[in-house]
Length: 239
Image (cartoon, rainbow, N blue to C red; front, side):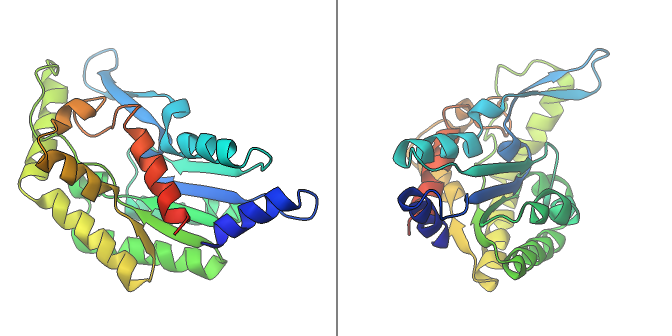
C-alpha cells in the first residue's frame, strides 16, 4: 500500500517527507472500550475506557518499533455506541478534516443490534466512496465475534439481557450476515479487506472459548486480543 511507501520515504528523508496520518473510524472496539458496569441507580451502562490498549495504539507501537525514526499521526475516531450510519454522518468532522493517508473502517457489531442490514451496507459504501474521493487509502477491517454463551461472570439482570441478545445474534447467524454484507460493500468499492472476524471464527472452530476472550463477556475484546487486530492490520498494510 502507498501508506508503507510514505512511511519508508519519511524514514529515508526525515526533512523532505510529510508525516503520515492513519485514521481509524469505528465504534467502541476502535475507541478502546473494555468492561461494562452500571452507573448509580443501576439502569444506565457505563464503559471502562483504556485507549492505551486499543488496536490503533498497538499498531502505533508496532510501527514505532519497526520505523523508530518516523513520527506517525494516529487519529482515533472510534466512538462507543457508534455504527456505520452515524459514522457516515461524522466522517467529514472526525476523519476527512484530518486529511488521512490511510483510513481503517471497522463497523458491524452495533449495526447487527440496531441498523437494518441494507442501511449498513449502503452506509459503508458511501463511507468508502467519500474516503477514496478524498485521496485516502482505505481498509475495511471486520470486527471480532460476540459472545457465544452467557457468561457466569455476568450477574446483573440488566447487563445479562444485553448479553443474551448478543449471544442470540452471534449464534443464529445474524452477525455472520452483517460481516459478509460489509465485506461485500468493500469488494464493490474495491476496498482492501482485513478479515479479523474470520480469524475469530477459526479460533472458535478450533475449540477456543470465544466468550472468555471478551473483556465484558459480550462484545469487547480483552486488551491482549486487540493485538490480533494490530498485527492483522500491519499484514494488510504491507500487502
